Image 1 (cartoon, one colour):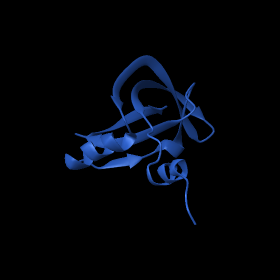
Image 2 (spheres, helix red, strand yellow):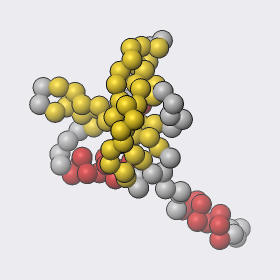
Image 3 (cartoon, one colour):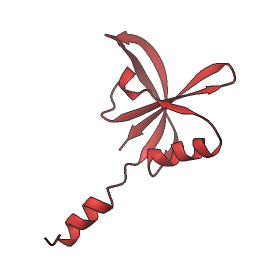
Image 4 (tube, helix red, strand yellow):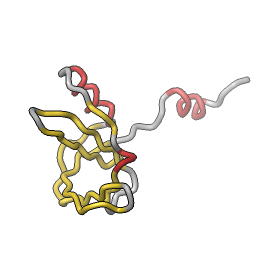
Length: 97
């Protein structure tokens, strides 16, 4: 079976998923999920969320994906990660474009 060039590229080189860090505030709970509202400011841009995760892992920091536990208002695709810093938990929210 021969693959066309475009099919080969799509299978073996998936499309990049650029991610932009968002600053959010909590607006309480909706059902069992926490609602986060973007503050309008955007942070760092990454060609892929995995680039941010790799940087954290190289720095010996453990990150946990909690995307299923939150909703982000006005964003269709997002990823949310938690990490411990000092004695508190820091949440990082990304808008996937």
